[in-house]
Image 1 (cartoon, rainbow, N blue to C red):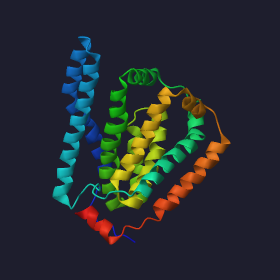
Image 2: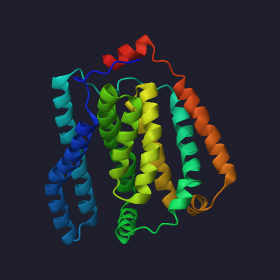
Image 3: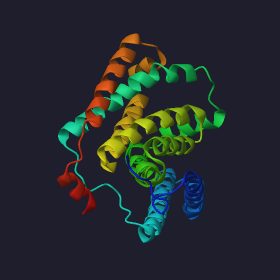
Length: 272
């Protein structure tokens, strides 16, 4: 059994403080870009407005991640687990696990949450996102969110909690933060549970790239579903076949990732 060192990683209390610190800095770093974006919007330059908003989001994430990385690097041998290149087989199982999760969630909690009305501000936010050019939607949902949210939630918070508190608490707490980051009930519940899936895969594989890929595939599916009515319809209707198939595929995916052994050459690759 691994011995946890109080001088390594972060405690639950410290993780809560770090989470709020990250969100405060996101707001602060984003203010100048938001003001600039509003200026462009008032002058009728919608595409420029949306581009400036995304640029501000990227800059904010980079500054925050760099700041936190330097802090932990001074305290211990901290690194992001991104040097290991996942195999094709691992990538295929990530896609299978993502689709399986969507099948299971849509036919369990997803169905139940549909009975709870969404707040007007949430509906308006989705309408605004869907009105953006497709390229900007893709960059926001499939590039910015998977890369930066995974670095923060799995690469920093889960990684540091795992050193002090163990994998179970680290996965659950980082997933809770991931859910809260979405700022609404419907997305938040989904984000929590898929966060657990990504957390398990991160711990089992020691690879941040695999969780980024899973996040990418999930968000890409959501983006495609906006333009294909059939996908939107099947999400709204219960299917015992999809539930059973999803459960079986999710179990098979778990067995695959649970059976991965981090060999010496992989460990050296991660540490180099």
